[in-house]
Length: 519
Ligand code: CA
Image 1 (tube, rainbow, N blue to C red):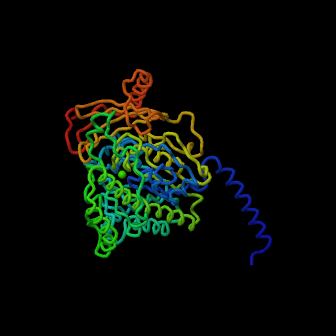
Image 2: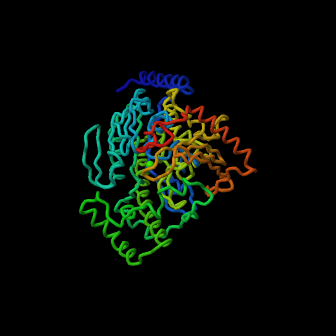
Image 3: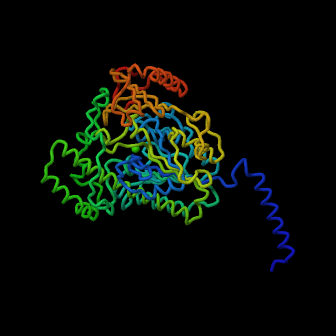
């Protein structure tokens, strides 16, 4: 039995200690550094998240919407180079492709010796893990635990590499990644703050939904975007010459007219039960011309949105686990995708362009006590900012080479006086796989000035987003826009200088083909 007097002394001591701690620790460093749960999907278009309120109302995503309801939705999170690997390299390093060296998906290999935010968090005492898609060729660095898909990975029964060892799995990739993240959360060292990067393969091509989601949309007919049959009039050769249309580029595999190879026999039975009767009806109807494009669009959306469903369930499960473990109050949860994606706009799938659907990634952040619940931010933020944000949240300085900014002031619901009002973009990979010409440009709230380069057919375009939000007609050279055009040209040069963008790039920056005016 503890003596009454001892109890009083102990209680007095605790009160005194609490007083000292709160006074000393409040302004400088939070008593507990926040945990970070970073959920990244692949090619998930903001149009396919209900919190973004797309006019087509393609899907309900209650899991991701919970983050919007309890945190902040970003309406203009712009990526530096809209393609998978380069976006991941930018996220890790807080730098553009010309600084981190990862320009394209064709021949780039991530230099894991450079500073990354996971590495810096790990050195500062965070327990760090990445589970899921990595896609940067070299092994991850800066993680206490890593378990990744080799390359793009498979949707069904994917092989994984766990801390360097190849392992087999059985099941659906999104579920497997989620389960392994939940296991890691349960078994982590609770004495340390954590960084968990949950990186989904979905919703990347070839869009294989989970078996339980094949019939989830009840054969809904999805609304078409206004520009499904875009003829690219009003724009230059790059838009005419691309190879990423639903009409021309999608394969029988993309369209599930042949079954995927990664299914086991049991999975194949359930797969065929859904697709075979529908494929038979398609073959019997034998649509042509625009009707064929319409059929392909419907099949594409069915499969793509089917993949979104499992990702959304994953977000719900991870948030529920944080609740169960009592971690929600001190965990920053971020949901984003490596870039945006086309869901039929301009007749396209894929990404790459400086245009809105590919340039803009979804971004939702919940940080209890910081992000006002149900808030939205229309300032220009970027995947370039993630690294500095996480470092600042942990009370760590960012290396000089990082080129973004901490989002913390924005997350509080205010915009700092000197927040960016323009953004530099640059894309390289050409000609394969989708024949999108290299281009760079400057983006503001209302305008985009684009420069195509490197192919010997260089040209510019100017888009006025206020008049033409669908970016259908370049207004370059119009007299009434001469002022804004000159201003944007000046800003473009300013940003290129500030961001140390070279005039020439090595041939490897473009992928596998040497371009005429580059060494
Ligand atoms: Ca991607």
